[in-house]
Length: 352
Image 1 (cartoon, rainbow, N blue to C red):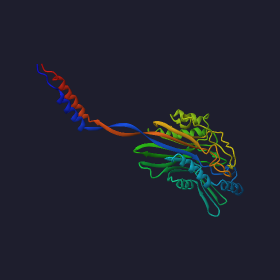
Image 2: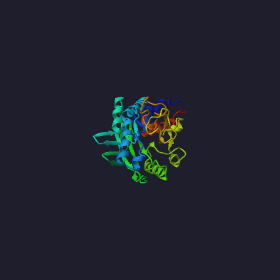
Image 3: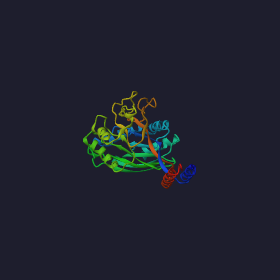
Image 4: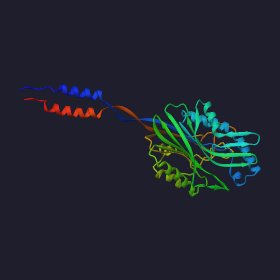
């Protein structure tokens, strides 16, 4: 009886597999830290909207000056630096104010400068322009702005502003609320980021505006983050609408939920007065949730006015994005040859 050793067949098969590599996708998560912050213009705007006279406007501007946004911006920048610098920051009430005498306050730029002082470099990735008021030499432009980290390898972000169709008029002034939609990519993996400021009158327009964002985002399948001042508690229809659309409330999911609005208009209350939860980070399509916390919500940052960075707390979160990487995989031709050779070898494993 003769016996044929099959070993050469396996040597050939292994050789073909080794020299004919392909690729296979595997998940390696990358971290996406983000933040949302209503900057607060620094004054109660209702008297101005109701009666924009030189007296009401001057009183509001005096409050803005007393509430010292440059100092508040430094406190917000410190909060951002404490978590290493979010990749994207959504800002509401990132206003531009000019006054007689040449004084101009550009809130987004002031914050960018404060972040740079912390060693964090940002640029505006997208802007939405809302209502504008001009009277008695004063000008105010309301804005939503998204800041993006610069100098981060493999990171790109480009945004556009959108005004809601469901507009709201308050005291005769169309608020022109809207959102900034940012198309971002990190290490070649795309995702979308939206920052918004919804209707503050708690009318049906609030949920309708959220619906406009959802409708826009439903056109693509990329992972998505929606952040901002929603002016809606979890008990209101807007919150339910976000959850029904498949979004997860990150701070609630991680047990970090708490009130985010509102401190006294003069920011001079020594004990926090936050009672409503209006500010959120919602996610859809990310692989996991890593971190959530509130910023500027419990302890004054200084012992004289302004005591608080804003009348809203900031919300910081970190989510994971599944990154596609490549690992060697036998080429399909190698697999075919392997099957043929193994089949041939099986016929001649034993010769009698």
